[in-house]
Image (cartoon, rainbow, N blue to C red; front, side, top):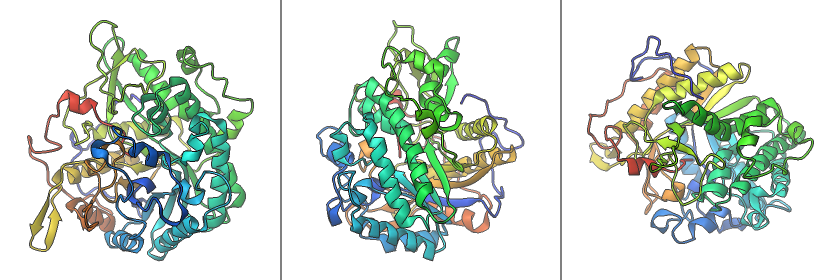
Length: 510
């Protein structure tokens, strides 16, 4: 997605206020099971690839693991009450596959089903719509031992798991999301080595792309066979906003758009893989894992496309002589997230940056939403993740502990303004799920990065709503974009020009 934004009548920096959102616009927040639940050995849960990966020395900062995370599993009612106090209208959560099927196959674990039933019923009782994601990266380790997402059988097992969840919760869930960011699962998990299972094999990464696409289609079909209400069906993609640079920028953008965006949008929505990407990657794989009839299995009608957005990338072709710049926003573990396109350079982005080293560019969100609408005008969209990590500080205030996260509040204000501009340009945008409800295990960065609008003390598990949470609650209550403090230039976080090394060392968020 490379289109430039039309600034219209809004402010150049997207610091608008007073913008009104319709009564049917769905405000919520999002989390992921491994990042918040903890209780990895409780009630029959089996090990996942992230349990294995995080316990492998050198894979996660500080040796952190998700063993306890935010202890959400044991503090469910407290967290549900917190959501209600903030006024959330929707909550996007993920289900831990190994809680349901400890080895990824076989009969359901009743204790795991009961937990998510309590979660869904608790949401409904509080007037919050449940948006359930079936897969947010915690693959049962037993399936990985058989080849993981590089193995076609994993997609078939995923359909059985989806059917189990549909049979239990198919009368209550408002929206079913099959996969969260399959780009990350495939390329960071099997190509670059930055995410679990930590492999560095381009052919396996591309096989994983296909089997994840297939898993989506099979799961949607399975759900439709058993659900009894009228839910939405969706998938969430972290589509890349790509800025070309210089005379070779367009070719580089074509290649990265192919790997990052069109390898998913093509089969999911158009019924075919892009021919140019098959050619680009012919020296990596022969694509023999795509079987006759797969296109029909993958292209299932969906009612909503989830969009995750955090930052942009700028690309050009590498000259092969100068040191190659690889500021693609993902943690460098030695492999590549771009099989077949290692000749592309990712240039350092202009600041300011978040604590992850990602550039702050709300125009990218507007560009992405508008480009998707123009390509698929009949398909409703929802922002299923957007948020930022900053170096929050807990202070004592007149009313008790507080976190004055000016940078995050400003970030959200500007990105909600971008979403509003997209709506004004005709985009059918149904809602916005802020990432994240609470600080959590930030994958390869452990507990060192805080994305939450609610602070979590990892020793006591005490929850403290930050100023951004209070700002968001006001937005939900009034349905108008509140004003927000503007960070001072040079302040920590959004006013800081991070070094190139820091910017290029970022990993995928969620």
